[in-house]
Image (cartoon, rainbow, N blue to C red; front, side, top):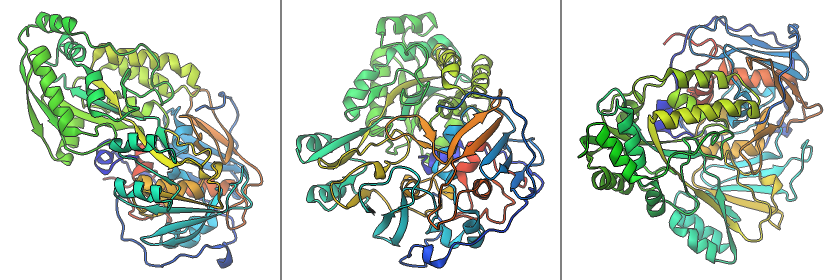
Length: 581
């Protein structure tokens, strides 16, 4: 998921005042105390910040009656893109957008939009006990959260889908990768996350263990700002792109399974690799281009970076030094390496204020190519200097095409435009891996999200999983950390969810969500007969209430853990009915 530093850079804080939403409510029963799981302590952690789709159809949209919830924004002026969410009947919900968004299913698959009973949201006022005790429709229901030690889940016997072949799922945590591996080797846990790259070979050579590679959803890139000479000359940018041996960087500083980037977006993202591959290392052509641009002996510049480990940059200092060496020896470009603190670096790089090279990366927030391309090259981006209207127009067109195969042509043209304009040079897609006991069957780790543990089989009646930190809370509408999200995904489900072993999303609580011709209106038909862990049945009002608590700033239940609701704001360009800032 998004790291705090990058989150701050990625969110569009252009929020506008809307009038209060109109909500009609019908009485609903509260869950019984007996239906609620035991919480080991009532003391909550202090707040901490942490696709396939159906074909477009044309249909009239019925106006919701007083029996069904509807939340609206009074205006589409400004950055927020969610205009209205309405229950049309007990099993149908409509989402009206201010601008087309073909990525709706991919965004709806994020754990931040997990559905809980309307009655539970209202009885907890969107905070307090809901932070530690989610009530969902997932294959696991929370049994106990023993703070600082474990999360325990029990199998939900009334789950609508395939039930787990074992009864209990346990989450533990340990910050040190070496300690996690030791716990796995000892048999204390069945699977661990984030194996150190230096331990890959050890795990692979141990016949009792299995290394489970995770498809990459990240990209390291070298950015250049065309506002500043000599990067205003496309020939210079292309010379740099051809003059860097990216394979040498991946081979020397990345774990097994990492790849040289063929496109700005990794191929694990649908349509990420549409279009031609990026040009390969060609030193004679690079030197000829640089000479033609008037720099036969190179030039002087700066190379900015921050020394923070990321999957896309496992060795920041060493990779930076390697780039410095290659630029000097291959092209005669003398760069001064400048280390910056993370906040200043992110803000200045994304704000287009760095006169030189900058080494940065990105990890996909959701399973759609727009997660990469719109942020970096869309209408609001200033990171690489002068805007490129031809590229922005292609991204706008593609954003209105819901069908992935139809959108592929537009994204191919957009990717080809990026490789022709060269605002940035994609270098690597960093690999990561889980590890498990060899006896664990069917443990699939998808490119997005956490494993669906109910589809695996530990060979016993209990599965113990160890991640690298304790969740901040279990109300993921207001969290951004992976550890919270992984736990939420076991209990809560959204309209869509991540496929077990592919980058695509698939229906969960929705049977399907169909767009209108322009992808500006989405109508979702819910599964019938789905039960929550408290025994109540899924209703369209539960969907509206859950989304409104996350997105509507005027909702009395828009409280959460920190109150920041970072992901809902980022995904939809702002909150509904947000006061002016």
